[in-house]
Length: 281
Image 1 (cartoon, rainbow, N blue to C red):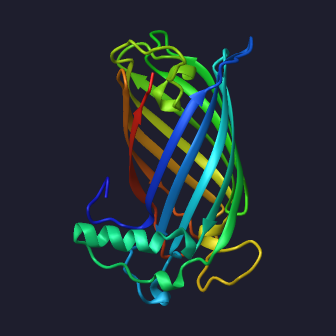
Image 2 (image 1 turned 90 degrees about the horizontal axis):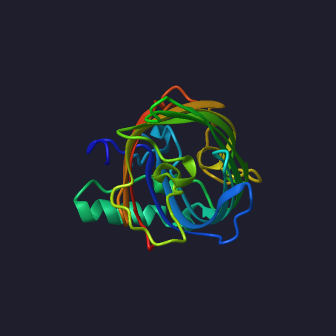
């Protein structure tokens, strides 16, 4: 709905709530060590949320409710490493069906149908690793290039991603350890600056998918009524705007994602992301 009032497919909705704070013990090489607690809820549907006939579903209905804890280290050489430990539940117990039906009723949309064939309950346990490195700025420091690699291993997502992200600013860019794009513009000191950052960004990436339980069901059984193979190679590109003020950070982005399911009916799709962050210092 953040990109189209008529589109409601595949990655249908995602809600996350995060709280993060800094350690007070950086080392000689370390600028910041950041801890992040997150609650999240992802919701997936076929080409529509109203596909009552299982034969017409080109992707399984699925919901994933999770919590995770992350540790991110930002280094003085403008690199960063993050490790995240995640636990959750995939399936009816995630309450994705109830959430979608409640939301559609609240805004006067159609009644979702087809959740009777959703991916069944299974425990989610994942470890996610991310490495980020700034590889250079233009001479005026208004454009930069940052390469990243991400690995996800566990019972829900198993994939390897490579990509880069570039910021296009209206003035000289902050280093990556003090940038809203990387959620690193927090400090243990009082924030007195007004507008710190405004810029566009682009983030293309390519992933190898070994397993995706929201499409393929459990690694350990085949009790879900409908599953498909995940497409082993997927690509995405994200375009967006980030703005950071004294207390509030804002962001809007559009992501185009190539087809993720290995059948001839699924297509690529796009979705929007809205971000708002409040800084206590």
